[in-house]
Image (cartoon, rainbow, N blue to C red; front, side):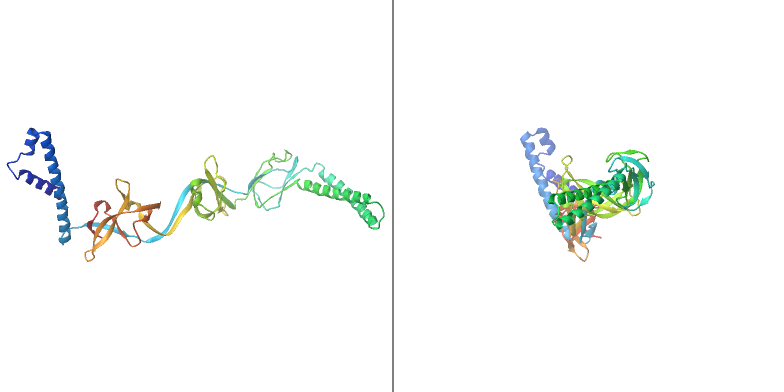
Length: 387
């Protein structure tokens, strides 16, 4: 304000210094357009020159005046620190061990040996299907196999003694081996009448009722789940593919139970979905306490960039000029005894942001001090006192 007052005082002095010249009011009322433009140009040049000289005088006064009051600012000293950047996505919780069990052969559901909510071990008998005479067929084939084996052994002994024809020996051998295969296949069919647990888990829901007519692959019998180990899956835009790898660290937050987990990426899909240009990522979560349930939603943060020696600056200390260039005020020591610094406008190149801080890629280094408090009150090259 003082600078402007001094400037206008000088202008007034110049205008009034000579009585033989026309005043501005007289030129405006009586002069031509050319005279007015000339007067304007003269005044602009005078103002610019006076302003330049006034700035020079102020600089000299600031350097010589030991009693002047400096603007007080607070500062922070920059140092190298570890920086991890995360990208966020929405995911869904599921388990690989959450299946509906279907029969492999048709038949009536003879019996169910478990109850809903029951914990079972792998191999536990869950249900039985009526064998529909399969056991009788198996026993009949086993009798035929016994006879075929005896016949084959005798023919083999005779053939070794060069008794009998080769065709008789080959027929006996073929019949024996064929029945052996038939018995094996029938045993497999009989085994399929008993439904056993494919893994440790809990009987979540018994779907079919006893006596129901079951169709292979169509009629579910029961659901078995194991929630000890869950997974979070998410569809991630392909732009992030170069930065997300297997074993990349990840943070998972499940809002409905207010739980957080620190895990790593287990698998990264190799297929880009053409519909949404995304790839699949899966993250395993230990769920021994059973709090996680299938189809819960989760918020995922995946680490896509790390720098162990980053220079970080609070976002609030970054200013921007009219051209969109970012800058800070770096403090350069002028007088150590009085703690006087010069605030120097320093342009910086910004990187990624996290937790209200931004990485500085160019323009600053560890050990530099920048203005933090009072940043809006200082100007380039202004002397300030660092408190």
